[in-house]
Image 1 (spheres, rainbow, N blue to C red):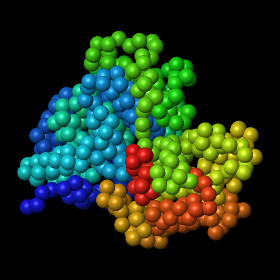
Image 2: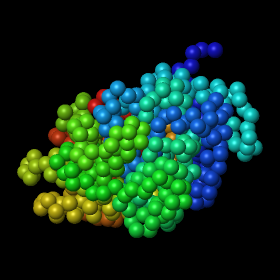
Image 3: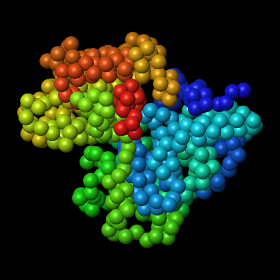
Image 4: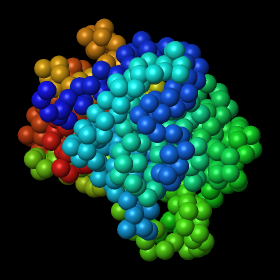
Length: 501
């Protein structure tokens, strides 16, 4: 048998993806199908040679939320690495932008293709060899996210990390990361109200799910939340016997610090990260927290990187092109995105109309989401920001071109291996139904917008070709938003990996 390659690992991993029908069944069940996740994950963990208690050796900081959990993890990771530069710090997040191995990081860097391949097939082979199942309903192999979670646990244990920042995938209580018996500390970032409509759940139900990561004897942290959500989180901390429940206060000390992540919404995420690290060091290292931020804390905040979130990327090939990347995919996160983009630091850098670049919006959203509402949010926030900054521009003329494209990577209809997605309904993809609906919604919201500048395209590569054409006539600035998968594919196709990741 030939040597196994990274491409082989990705091909095997993609065979574990859930199709659209399966994901839709989970959504319609209100998450009840996911209730089997914890016992199944424990079974998979044991089949690859570990017990749940082994995961305590990872010294976990567990983070969930509906907004900002990834950014909070990025801040936490950076702070901890600056405070303890001699440590080996693991970070597990999702989704990835360009390569699956981005999800599993050691000291800020994705594990190598060689390491990912080795750990991937060690898990695969152990599952193949030990097929004894306690539960008759447990599939032989876990689904995509659960499998990558197993690989992360195996990698971090094998590499003997000193600490692990563990981001929940979806929810909390039934998430496959939630099998760590005793993390060092657990935190919940902001609960997005618009998730209640998308998930068909009340804020109380969402808070119950998120608070499900709290554990007996473990500090339970959160940021300020809507009243109903806060009450449920507090109740979860009591029911699950957390050692304490702390609501992270406002952060005036961050006013003079230039955070590594752009956007005013990041202040709350940074403050939660600070408290998570302080609590971790207090428990794990017996280091009493100081009221003032140390130089290493500040440096960690300033040097935090989290690609694809309010990120400015000069094109390394086309000097006339700048990309503004934000994977915002909810009404609230798109509001934050436009607050960042339509500001004097980004799109409104110059008041001289003669220096105004051509602007392009590239947008896509997941099938089933309210694209019209999303576009309405973009335009409404743009209007309020233009008024706030006393700009002469109008929301309808902020962009010269708008592009609605599928998340397919290449013009020939193929995906980059790491970006392959089987969760898009085939008929929707074939007819570009979602993109057509977005274009129609834009035309309705902006009836004066030139119809020839509204583009519906089958791939990200097609979108980049349009941008390259616009860029031939001068400076062009491109906002890419609505989907992290779109942002990741754009980084790949436009050749931005060397500067964006």
